[in-house]
Image 1: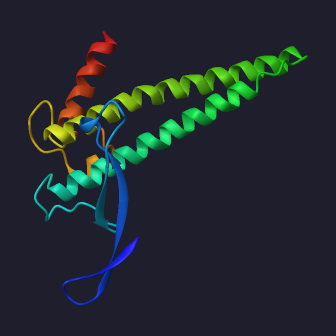
Image 2: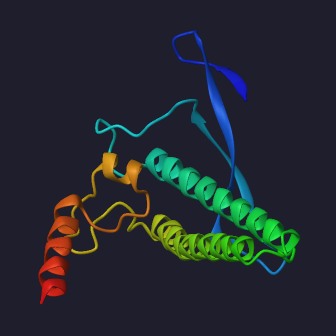
Length: 170
């Protein structure tokens, strides 16, 4: 982190974040760039919707989330590989197998989540991020902050869930 003088003479801290842009991939890997945002920055309604700062904020959030999932998956695979011990007791073996199955199921869900994160990063790049796929209206910043992979506004999501409930009950 570095301190930079603000326009009012006071210093403010900026946070340097490593970004991997998926759209600039080369045969050698991916390009990275440093993006600075004020420390503790959160998008506000007072800024233009999906301004460059908003895009940087959500891109950083999505990249960090993806890196955390990948790290957890590596740890899980490492632990599952190490924990291949045979249990003499059938109850211990069943418990171990159940735990492994649950862990693998959770990791599979996270693998699917990675594809949604990648899709959200692609939407940031093409300029469609933050807008409802159904109505074209902006998705609220609070909703995006809570669920950065959201593709529907709160109202559209509620309609979708109501329709899903009606058809599921039939």
